[in-house]
Image 1: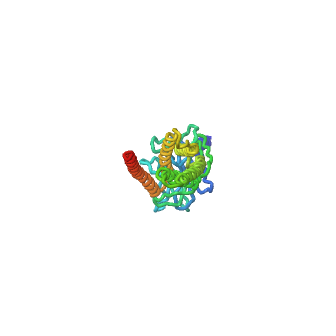
Image 2 (image 1 turned 135 degrees about the vertical axis):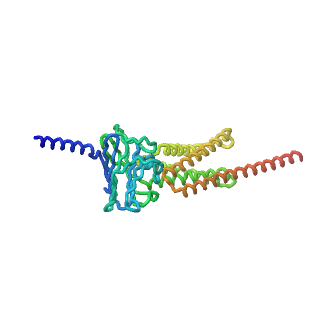
Image 3 (image 1 turned 120 degrees about the vertical axis):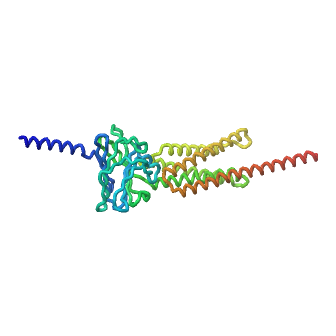
Amino acid sequence: WDRMFGHLLLGLFALRHAHEHVTSSGFSSPDGLLKVDWYIEGTQITFNLTGTIGRGWIGIGINNQRAMVGSDIMLAYVSETDTIELVDAKAVALKRPTPDTISNLYVNSSSFINDTIFVCFTRPLDTHDPQDNPIQVDGHTQYITWAYGDSYGNYDLIREHNNRGAVKVDFQSGTAKETKTLHPKAASAHGVLMVLSWGFILPIGMVIARFGRTFTFWFKIHRALQLVGVFLACIGIFVGLSLSKNEHFEHKSHAGIGITILLGGVLQIAIAWFRPHPDTPFRQTWYFAHVLIAILLFILGMVNIFDGMNLFGLRKSLRMAFAAWLVVLLVGSLFGSIIMGVLQNKSRLRRQIVNSAMLESK
């Protein structure tokens, strides 16, 4: 009896011990190549990541919204010596996450065998590190973004990837639900449409309205450019709104500024359509309002374009190229305004001289 009782106690202890280490929950990527599971014990959480992808990298991120930007990234990659390196990082834009100053990830075991990356690591639920996102176990849902790629050897070689997604998680109950997949091509289309409209077509239309009045068809060209620009911006906004339902592209401030700019562009078209006759006293007030709104929209447009470039992680060379175009546009407009002012003053002086000479001759 003593022996049986001892075995029973030992079995109950082993069962309790096993229960404490049972996986709370987990999920797999739709293709089954990446598997993620975890368990919580006290104030610590342990993750197991398994990726059957060959030499490359696997990673997850913790965030309170469906977005890569702002995620607390935990990424494992195969080094040049086929060992596993684990990186604690922060996604500050849609590009390679920035490694944290201090890593709060503690590796329990890792391996790269038979084209399979495996890493088991532990971290505190709340690291009290401003570069990390606390994992909530109070019933609030969070998101785990996941991704994997085929670059390896060095963290600086980690590049853009197409295998990614997000899962909505309740760490308290252990439920995990896959959310909508990502559409990076739609983000590219949104960016191209907005840069083309607010970065080129609409500003060129403004320049023509400012300096092209000596040409016969300046107004028709100006009107056509503004209509085409606003039309393309409308398409870009609709594409952008579709991205707001997506894991990586939920950026409320960027979307809010974009919608405000679009409404301002539509308002400009309405103002132009109902412009008063040149001989009426309200014409000057109308012109001032039309120009002021155009300048404000241009400034907001440039701010949002650069914000979008940063969010999407656009290459620095492309951002510098657009900045150079913007400098040319602004400097050219400034010098054009100075030259136009000088010429207008000379023309005014000539008219005054001619009028004075005509009065004297009478």
